[in-house]
Image 1 (tube, rainbow, N blue to C red):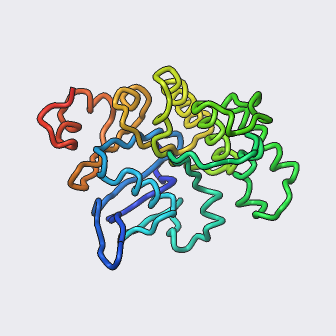
Image 2: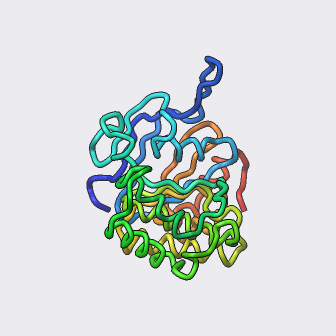
Length: 250
């Protein structure tokens, strides 16, 4: 792995504040994402996986700690500049109305063009390249509302690719897919990480997919501890069972 991470956190505390009360989900997290690396984030429900994704994306403020993009503090980077470096694919299926897939992918160019800005020739090239990268050229003029879950997820990833960000954070991207589509999507993400030297962080409940496709696995436990391991190591020890609070994990 390269010596300098694309994204790095030190002593990061994540959680949320509601009506003056602070709920800490995980504390003192030290982590790093490197170019060309696919990291799978595992953990029980409620451990804070989605909160960690949102915090690393800059969508939710950390409770404390240091968060850097290529050595620059998040607080020193404007939201627009941050969007040029970090793209996000969330679990929620947002209504797209009568928008076609190509238009949805074009939203990834807004950090460069602005909400009212027109698309340049380079923008259109990025959109076409993103659709091609995920094998969705044939979907370009299809209405998003008519797409299958797998097709919609590919288009969402194409939108993230159109941002030309070097870091992609995905929250449960395989959640609504059947088994063959899950493997197909993970295979696509693995190739994107390697071919485009992207840093990918994927939260998932699917241990089998993580063991098969991840370079590195992060396990966020119920008590807010983050363990870094590899598929080979994880398949031989009891780390996952401990994280889920059980004696064994079969």
